[in-house]
Image (tube, rainbow, N blue to C red; front, side):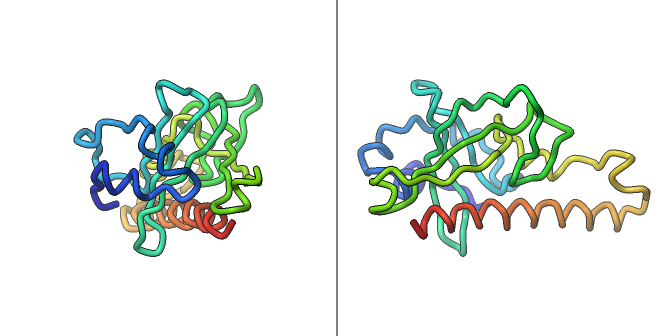
Length: 165
């Protein structure tokens, strides 16, 4: 992912008012390892029910506001974006208001995403022994690239659905 400025992030939100985007508490952008992430996700420290995701979709920066507790349910569920159940604290359910008139009427779309937005790390971790039965570095690298591409495709598809309203 390309490094982003505060202004780029605040202007990228497709399902929030300009005022809501300006009031969002952003993470420390200087501490973000942009080259190691496919999306930037964080929880608002002042309003724990609000979560934000910024990603690149078709070479455009898209920001989404998500609502949810950010806590994983009692039962483990699969993250819809990284499809990982091994690492992290598990997936949590989130809803995002749709963009435009539909979203202002209260229409939303839901998904289950890693509660701590760990997807970027999950797709880059070494596979467990039962996932890939090889030590071939080329096959392991290919498997990692496939997981990264899957995360990019699934997160972008969710963002496109929100933008379509």
